[in-house]
Image 1 (cartoon, helix red, strand yellow):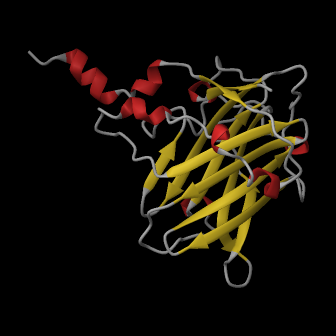
Image 2 (cartoon, rainbow, N blue to C red):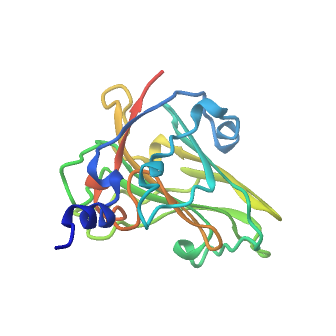
Image 3 (cartoon, rainbow, N blue to C red):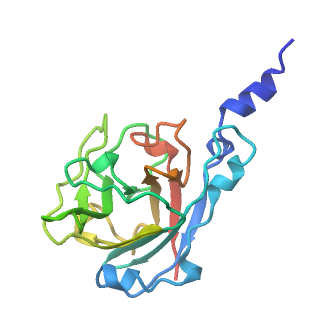
Length: 228
């Protein structure tokens, strides 16, 4: 008789069994360049390491760091170990090398459809401009959302990118104005997930892997606790 417990453990990511809460440090932020100064203490933990024994385990290839301030949130991503050229197009955001971020300013983990407090952003290290070398920051809709977040305005999302022969990096700034409901004084927790995508290296996520519908379900996101 098949061992159903073993089969279940193989199908389910261990991350799916937990609701993670991770402290997020405060830092003086004014734009993407301030985010680029985040040191090792701002690195987000490797939650995917819990999946190391599963067939769908992700290879960790990106260094992701994050910080908060009353003015907004900063995110940096650094990818190394590439042998193929970076591929980014502002006309194909979801297919490009870059990072997507999901944020819920109310950290409501008991709903399965996004509310107006849920946001989805995408940042690419390149892909815009006449020669596709300019970094890209944009907002994406969340599938099946009960209500969409307010569309962002120019300058509410900022990003600086860099591409090399062996990798890419970016520093992004999400202003408080782009985050409906962002109020660090009253709400110290954020729902959060990210997905770093690279055509050569794969996909690296935070709170749950690709077998879970985190792209549209806020209950699959982790919690960021805004600290000092």
